[in-house]
Amino acid sequence: MKPILIIRTGRAPDPIRARHGDFPHWFRLSAALSPVRVRIVDVAAGENLPAPKEVAGALITGSAAMVTERAAWSERTAGWIRDAMDAQLPLFGVCYGHQLMAHALGGRVDYLPGGREIGTLPIELTAAAAGDSLTARLPVRFRAHTTHEQSVLEPPSGATVLARSARDPHHLLRYGPHALSVQFHPEFNADVMRAYIQRKREAMRREGSDPQQVYREVAATPIARRIMRAFGLRHGLSAA
Image (spheres, helix red, strand yellow):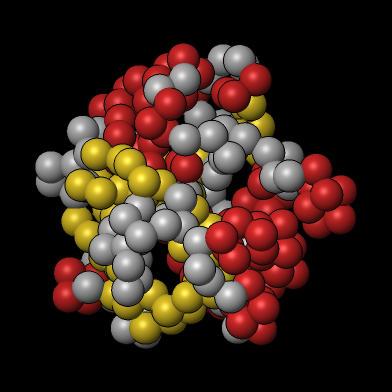
C-alpha cells in the first residue's frame, strides 16, 4: 500500500513536546492512521517530498513559522501542494498547513486583525456546510482548540468556506473533492491546549486577554477531532 504522508512544517515547543509528544504523533492518533503506513517528511528541515503519485494522501501540520515569511522550504511545499491538487491527492491541512494550502492555491494569508486566537472556542458551520459530505451531519456549533496569529484573510478562488469563529471567518475550507484545511487544531487534546495557553500567557496579557479565564474554558473537542478522522475514513487513510 502507498504510504500516508505527514508533512511536518514545524515542531511543538520543547517543554510541550517532552511531556505530550509532537505533531506527527497527535496527527496519527487523531486521524487513526496505521503506524506502518505513515511516512513523516520534515520539510522545515529540508527533507524532500515524494511525488504525489507515490503516496495515498497527505496531512500538513502546524508550525511556529509564518507563511508570510515565504521561507524557501515553505514555498517549495506550496508548489508540491499545487502538484498534489492536480493529481487529486487527498490533502488535509491544519493551522500552518491550512494557511499554506490557501496560499499555494491563490488565497491571501496575513496576521489576523485584532491579534491571536487562542483557547477552546466556538466554531460555527456556514450554510454551505449542510451540503458538504464531510460536514453535513455535524452540529451547527461545536468547540475547537485554537492558537494562531496569522490566518487566511482571503480564500482562494473557488474554495468553499464551511466554518468560522467569531473573529476568523475562514476556519474550515474545502478546495475540491479531496482537499480540505482547518485553522483550528483537531489534533490537540485539552492537556495540549492548556500547555499552549500556559506558554503564551505573558503574550496574552500584553494583548489584553485573560489567560486564566481562557485556561478555565478549555474543554474536550470531540466534534473537531471527528473531522480529521472522518476525512481519513472517507479517503481510505484511517483505520475503520
